[in-house]
Length: 133
Image (cartoon, rainbow, N blue to C red; front, side, top):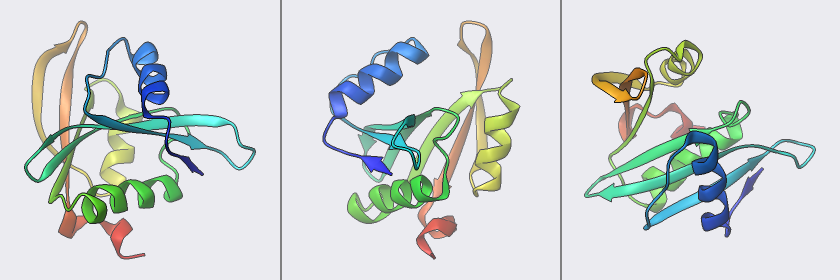
């Protein structure tokens, strides 16, 4: 289940866990499991022309339902052509998950994190399998 209408609180929760601060404008949603427990969140920011930056946090955040909601929010509601995200180079679990869901590795930001590089991933509207469901 997706929880909307609490962007500031959700972005603060994610930021505290990731050691960053999201600067408005942004939209953030909570992701709950079937028992109503928060298992993750998604923050959308850096809206630029036809792109949205996406930050996802939480082990249960990449459910099918959450992915469909994220795709519809980015590609239909905001009419974007692409979504961009990044993850630590050492985070092989998330990298595999992104690639499984159709994201494409687009580059590396060397020393982006204090102890690791960041891998940039992009998802294009016409490649998004979650819009076909």
